[in-house]
Length: 459
Image (cartoon, rainbow, N blue to C red):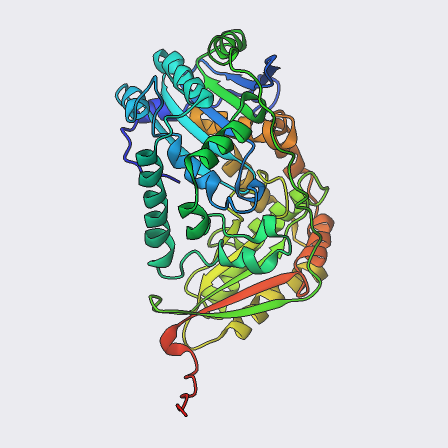
């Protein structure tokens, strides 16, 4: 994620009021989809509640899709895409969008890279022009490449290497939990790969992965589908499709033996633990029950892990959970349900894991009572709908679902999947996925807490 300062829209423009269908209490998002002749898929969600639009362009290139010797290229391009073109020099993108009261950003994940913006509807055409322009070609130059190589390396130093815990709960854990290189290499990229990138390398990467046929354009807000499709054709229709390398086979099954790793941390003040289990495949019948189980165990102060380890046993200082770097619904290959906690120096990783195992075993044995199950479902539904309120987030979610599921209408199906989860479903996924054999654990301790290494006597 680029570190950027934004001019925020007024609150009334950022969050559009929910438009519910008249015959139901469930929010049914308007979703219209069209594929242009060059392969660009366009998703439009019409909502005239405020004169604002959100735009997202999601490309089918992410960390696990990078070729070997090109680690970190997807992230590098997240930066290069804001460096301008021959038609729109560096700074134009930000000036056009933020100058009119909007904001924009980009991020890189395992299965995609997305570029998002929101602004008054009057800025829609300039935004689409700018997005189409950088899809055609960027301003590749030695100076630009060197500058962004240095920016990315500095971001790694600041955000990872010089931070307590260093992102071990989402970077390091994957390198140990996954078997295949596509899934377990560091998505930030090695300094060697970044430094060895030539102009020809980055030009080829843009050619191969940033064509219209490898992208989805999402538009949400004060625009009709007809207007959105016409504008997409106007600005993107003339960009020729380009061959995209086939995706590698990154599939892998559940783990069959627990992995335990201990790490030292020179910046940490208290120890921390990350416990990760491989998730169900996207589209599996177990995906929604796993989302419910994850929320039951580790989503907020009412969760079983928080109540058990922070409040009850007083072992931990906090409990947080994450699904890789995305959400329960936005992944297209192996991903992890990870629980991260800072714990008290008076306890240890074994006690933390034992406390987690006790809560998991209780779910497997007893299931979930009706009141708790309904509370968790309501929490998940509220979070899902809340994430669709802002037009930028809505456009982005629909574009990502279209890219990974092949159907943006999944946005309207997810609430029903959550509602349908039963106690038996939750018991099943707890017994299937949250097993010791499927678990990877990193115990991250302040260096001062590690056992002293025996001195080596020189001979």
